[in-house]
Length: 553
Ligand code: ATP
Ligand code: MG
Image 1 (cartoon, rainbow, N blue to C red):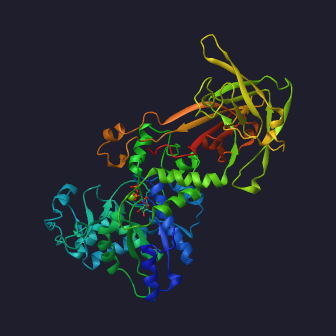
Image 2 (cartoon, rainbow, N blue to C red; image 1 turned 135 degrees about the horizontal axis):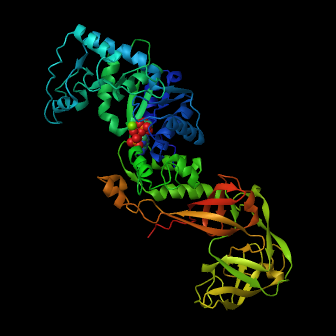
């Protein structure tokens, strides 16, 4: 890709050229801790941390925790883990709840300036008076309350005298504004719920719009970057700041970029929560989930996720990125970084009849031809071998370059073999294939025979030393290209791929017994796999992606 600047960098450069002090640049990533982060959040994280890197500026990790009904400590923990795993470190860890006192003081200031009032109507009534995008709203009958009356009522809201829903505090802006959000938005509500951090201290909580911009101001964020759906909020964001900002302080600037939308998946915590609660997936970190934790268990390296959002680009208009681009980024990265190993998933036994019964030798194979410093490893070879069932046909046409009776193939890093006959079970299934090998053809031995060209090369595992491993393979969770468009839970359910996960056992070369959880490998000719679990009793691999894009028609 080119090095041209994205539109946010242009905005910042313009601000700098107009005299904004570069040292005052400051960004934030503000997740609500009501679920796990997903691939969409990677974009927001990447946008902010890349700017910070470019301009040598800090990034605040701010938990937008103004909704105690939905937020939990476990989500805070997972968000921190995920941002760190992506390789980013934040300069400060903050919580909107750190500012509840200040936000409350400022709300009282608005009341004092006659810019906020307590409304005592039911929420349905308030909603009815909002009007529509094309017709203005109507003023609340409580809009003319005196400042003193509002002060007393807000104090009572705060001290717990009222029940939820009895009163709200609204900003007094303009019920006729073309922007519905400017029609006297609610800024405080009564909520008698303990908060994960402030416990029972508060029974009024600030609404998103009131908390967000003011938190940016308190932290002195210079550029508050969010997704396009917040564009209509910008006018309100600015109205609040107009009434608070003091001289000599940085006035935060909200700017919006397009969300990342991905085909064949959903990027909404609410909908992902539905999949978890319904038991459609095993949890937020199920390897089929588009969450950062799911992608991690699936074997996606952080660099592949970052490269993906970089390629997807920072734009001002919504679009949908193909899921295959994400898979492409994983393949590119894993090809460079993962060691090759041999694993046979659908085993077929071969017996090499002219190989000595008790002999076992070692052959050597490059760990990663893309990385010369990765070294070589030793692989045991002996008389009985497993290859993939798909790699043998007793009879085949000329285009079949794998093993068939009378034709030669090479066993990767070992010998050239030739199939001689098939031994069948009573039910006519193949029991084993007998073959012979050319003892002079050993790879790397330098003999003329070792350099003989044969059409096919197969991966294999020696039976005597093979280890049994579990292999989980995945398909897309949604068959439908745009599950995000589902209008109901039923419709979303109907888009689910019923066969998105399969599990089987495979034979692996013994070097894998020492594999570490999270370690990534290329199973030769099969794809990229990551170690999900390695205990004395069980080694489990998850398939990340195949070697090629199987989705292309
Ligand atoms: P969701 O709808 O999944 O809950 P959200 O926007 O409510 O997402 P937040 O935790 O509030 O989630 O988001 C934190 C930041 O991440 C916000 O700045 C938001 O704009 C950004 N973000 C969320 N989803 C995406 C996405 N798909 N693409 C880019 N940025 C996103
Ligand atoms: Mg949100």
